[in-house]
Image (cartoon, rainbow, N blue to C red; front, side):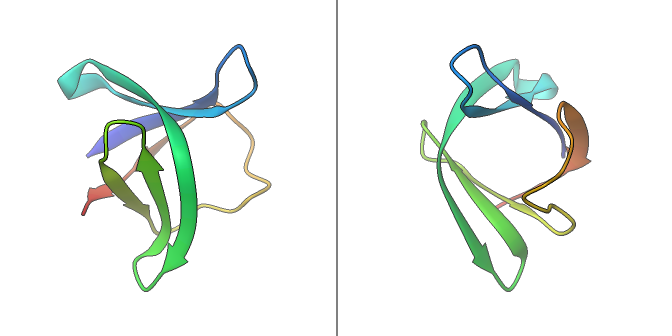
Length: 66
């Protein structure tokens, strides 16, 4: 699914999912076999294959919901 990553007003990483009209803050970041895994405040886990820590934001990427 397509999602947009950005920094919110407090400087925290947040994820916006247009199809669900959902915007949640990232509460945890880990690395797994699927790539970078972001855990959102609502409990969703999204995996990103090509996401580096120094990526310029905002950015639209493909994510896989775990």
